[in-house]
Length: 364
Image 1: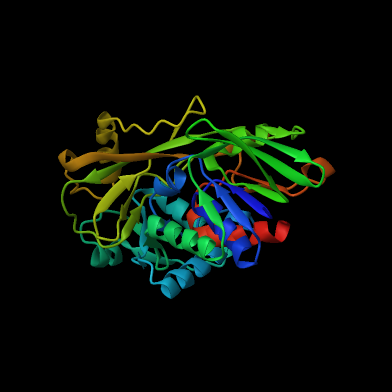
Image 2: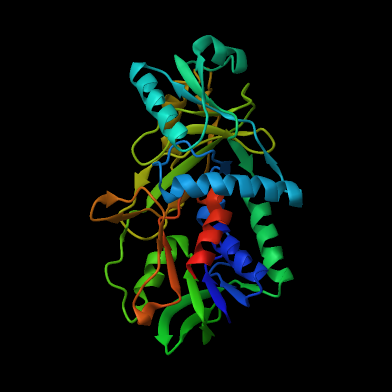
């Protein structure tokens, strides 16, 4: 193959699509039975406008670029998405100070937000309680599964392959090529040669990178962050996405809507002690969710919260603590030429997926 992409999440598929459209022979290897079973299907499915990310960072630049690409792609392919917009809500004085900083940060990224008073918020969302808010008209929601199916169809239309039930065990540089050792669901092992390898394995990216021979020095460490979601057994009089001010490790327990208008709440943030993904949602967390949401939506009926699903963000940490940006690593050493490792591809990875693909293509 010209290119092997490890991981058939939304980012891996977007990268494979980019190379396939350029006429490269592409193979995507996925360990699960179907694409997108980890981070790509266990998130809020939000199209982010680019508000929160450090100016000049990859997250900021690629979120904004990827947003425009993704909206145009969905329109062209008639994929389901909506742009209901979101309100970032300040419920106390400290929150209002945070909103001022968020607005300045967004402006530095080229994103315009409007400040709304309590009365102006009430006109849009009568059930919401707050002191003030920021209005983001571009924030949207998308069907991540439909998007991944469209990316896969693009790959296969250019004679690329997405092969599931194949887990990568080992990568080894042999002369000018890479040998990728894989094992299928029947335990059969095989080796596939490729000129270039892109490790977009998400939660498995670090284990894959550790399997590389010769060994890659100074890899980051995992800092996996679990987030739980709750659904709601009823309707709510809400028509926009509702976000509190951000918290450490995340954006706070927010209310998003699916494409049918049904609300869901989350995620919270819990850092895991191991590399093993835990997708269980403890029903007892409902009380904490209710208290958090009721600070801005006091009419929420806590008894209608139901455990939904959980996801794990593949955060990483370096010497300076938890990385606040995507890490796209290439290598100058001859023994690692043609390899790109993608680490820390969490939110806004879905929004930025097509822009990430462009960057990886240029790197190789």
